[in-house]
Length: 403
Image 1 (cartoon, one colour):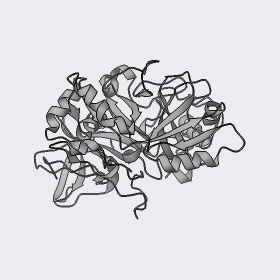
Image 2 (cartoon, one colour; image 1 turned 180 degrees about the vertical axis):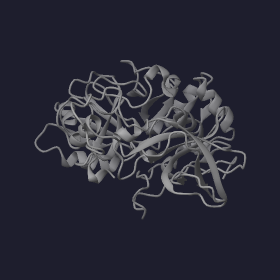
Image 3 (tube, rainbow, N blue to C red; image 1 turned 45 degrees about the vertical axis):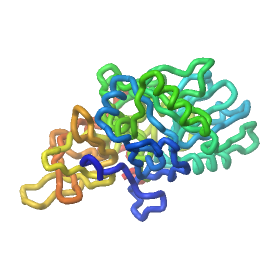
Image 4 (cartoon, one colour; image 1 turned 30 degrees about the vertical axis):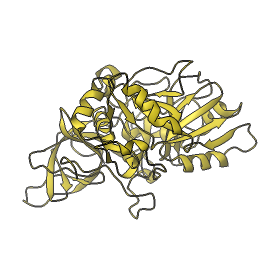
């Protein structure tokens, strides 16, 4: 532990607990970890720096729009061939058939029951489609199995390409490297939202993009940005701003039961009217008739006791009995210490948890109380849900596999 914040982490993919997030262990150790003061990250952020000695200053610089973040632990999959966009369109949640070059979006690979198996940032450069993900080997293998006789080529190019994070809300230009601009929290065409509109969303002011550079040039590309006055920031800073923006991250917010509605991910990663794909039936049924079984919440953690939970910590409803945490109602997924908000977290809880309840979160050494802000509202109804034509039975549309 450094500075009172536990390093981010989660069990490896072969962990015994099935509800824990799944990601692939990063393959490369960044050369920037050799910088003086660098503290290595853990879990899904292993291989890059958690911070470089002054996480508060790094976070302030990033929030002001003037810092660079090493994201070389992320994986990269390249899909080439003339059928690539129509093919990806047909097997994932996103509208990709007519995706223009240098236009950023994201996709989800769903199970037949609608659970999220993979997530990826997506951008096409006119010759190939680039997918940035934390499950590159597994995603590339799944895509390769789905090629059949189509004219597509799938390659895991993580060993050749590395990502750099920048606080800019701009797509890559014709003369720039492959660049993905985070579309969050804007609602894409064909998407919908459970939380507030984009202009009123906490993520509206967060600018973020990933630039792909040859891995052997990673240090040089970072140095070029530092030469303009941008300091180098670690994942502590980037994660704090992500959590503040209510932005789900597959490596932390997902478990084997997650459907995209629970994380408000229909904003940017799901097109509701594009036709059939694996898991589409569940997506449509829950949107039109049902309610997400769980919901993502933003937690303001009590920092007075200097305790901070780790990802995976149990969330409880409090009781009147001292020393007893009460009924478990969910799990913390992401934890951060924000330079202005203090200790904060994202958690996935049961939809039935009262919106005004003060929750209790288990920590090593005790418990902390947490006030919640609803990201997905308790009623579980999206902004454009069709009005029912008649009485709807309680729970209609929630498949037994979702609970």
